[in-house]
Length: 123
Image (cartoon, rainbow, N blue to C red; front, side, top):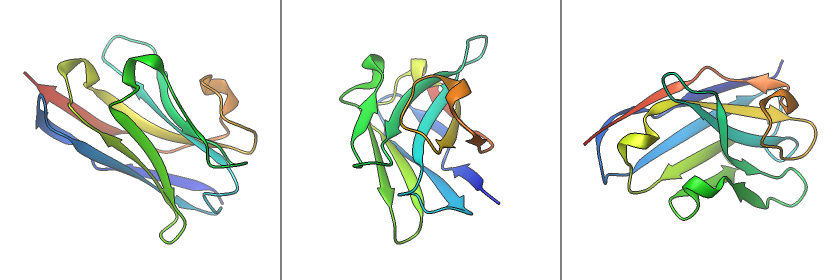
């Protein structure tokens, strides 16, 4: 059974960094494309980053380029999201998701979802 568990969220100050982790079970992170989404209060869920199952290449939504880094670790079967220079606009619940297909920024493309981890950034 494929399962994803996101962790690492919390309350941080603007300008600080945070590392979110998505622990995968039931599959190897190299076998599925994995993405991070976020949903801010009152807003739709949006994709922020994805790592390809084919070649490990990464994609980011424009608003986070240069501050977010997605990576996978085969040793502990996790996909991480490093976030630098947090701003209050990054406040959201962050979710990891996986698909047997390739990276997509559409939520409906993903077959598996983990529970979110909440990130709150104070100014």
